[in-house]
Length: 262
Image (tube, rainbow, N blue to C red; front, side, top):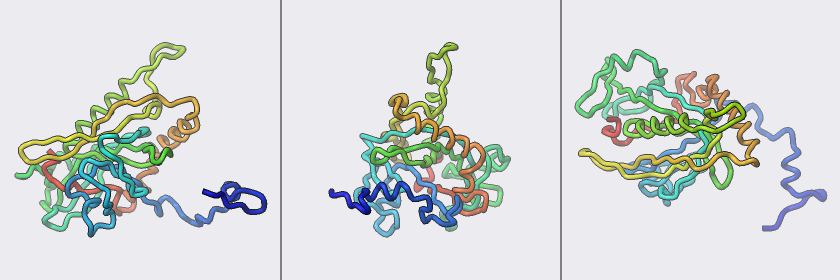
C-alpha cells in the first residue's frame, strides 16, 4: 500500500510528532474496558440481533471485544497477565430481568448470607438477585501482533482454571544472582485456548492455559508498561474504568447458563 506524504514526511511521522491528539477531556470514566471471553452457544457474538454479533464467531472461539476480533479456539492467542483480583458480582435474576446490580469486594459478608436454589445459584437474602464469584485477570492480549490491555472474567466452572493459572504463575521459578526466585506474573506469556467440558446439565467451552515463553530482550518496554499497569490496577484504577466506583455496569457479561456457576 502506498504511503501518503506531507511536507516531505510520511503521514505516520506527522501523526507521531503531534502533542495535542484531539482526545480532549477523555478520562477513565469515558473508556470501555475491553474483554476477552469464550464464545458459547448463546453468546451475543452468535446472535444476529446483538450489537456484538460477529458472523465469524463459532462456539469455542475466543472473542476480543476491543476490536470485535475472533480467535480460533484451537489455536488460541497469547496473554500476558498483569494483575489478579476477585470480586462478587450481584446480578438480577434472569427471570426478573437480569442485569448487573452491584459489584462487591471478595471479602463481603454477603456471600455467607446467600443460599443455593434448585439451579445451584447463590441467591441473596432479598431473593431478587444472585451473587457470582468472579475472578478477574487483567493483562495484555496479543491482537494482530500488538499487546492490547483487557480483562478476562472467569466465573462458575471457569474458576478452577483460574486457580490452576494462578498456581502456574506463582510456581514459575527463575535463577538469579541470589538464587532461585519467583518472577512477576508479567514476565511470561501464556497461551489461551479452549476445550469442551460437560456434565449432566449440558456442554460448554472452558479455558485451557499453558505457559508459552518468557519475555524477550526486545520486550523490555512491554515489561515496564505491564509493571505500571499492574500498579494502576492494584491502586483501584480499573474500578473507575469498569464503573464500579459510580455504580454503573462493569465490563462483565452475565453467564448464559446458570448451571455453569456450580
